[in-house]
Image 1 (cartoon, rainbow, N blue to C red):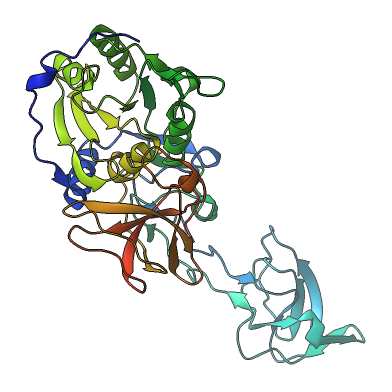
Image 2 (cartoon, one colour):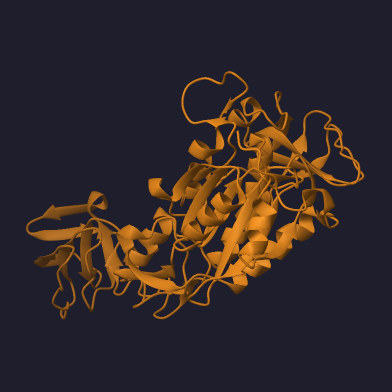
Length: 418
């Protein structure tokens, strides 16, 4: 292991930590101010992205009167003489004479002049004439029944999922203008880390290099295998070179470890060397206290961000949900993530003047959160069985029956939380 020490490590004084809610608001604001450029994408390539402009209809929906049943489009009181047939996808001739009808399929355009649609199962045919009693409620969909032309259906900032894609297709769109997906990279710091095999001889297995990119993808980021680098040697030159290289192509670079001011923690000197400024430097939250977010300006004038995740695995995930999630929401032009609430099934201790993010499993049907076990900052066993973190605010503790906010773990891109 390298013994090079961080410069002036023994003389660095840490600023007071930001409150957890304040930190979330701060990073969301800087992300929104640096919202990513917009691009036009084919509908099939938009799942998981974010609308960059409102979704509007190109025509009335439906664009023309359409039959909602199989049956007969009739004119007059009947019985009706059959004069034709209309199927979906065709334009029928008008019904110009009373007591005439055309056979009509579900979804077909109702001919001009029709006064009703008679369901096929409620009709009879005898001597070449159709008879029956149409229902009093119209059996067709009127133009504009769902929406009128140019009506705004969804605002900019709406996450695109399969339902939105289907709606856009119904509206007649072939492409959508969306925010470009954030490009992310990961630098793993720590000479003590192994990248294969079991831990041994004082070295531990890197759990964040394989898992953080997957979390980032669930937040809508693009992360290529080549964007994951490490372990980076525990020297300042190696840190500076690795971060400078990652920032050349990424909107966000996450780093693991080195967020404190220990003898081989080089992240802070690296950020100083690259001219970064802190958006947040430590947060009053447990676990995950030494998390940070810094901002740099790229050669194109656009902001780049560095999220310093603590080296302990669970602490790193706390930093992801606390800082990275709201930052990415801003970069994608989305609203600040709202936190659902659940009722605690068991007591959860507070952490004094720090916010406590406690891992929980959530019964969504009942709205109840159950604390999980094995939740030390270096543990991942509890995380593997959890749905998110219960927020226990500073100066409080969670008692059974308390309603508390829940920070959900990210789902697959485009997937809706239940």
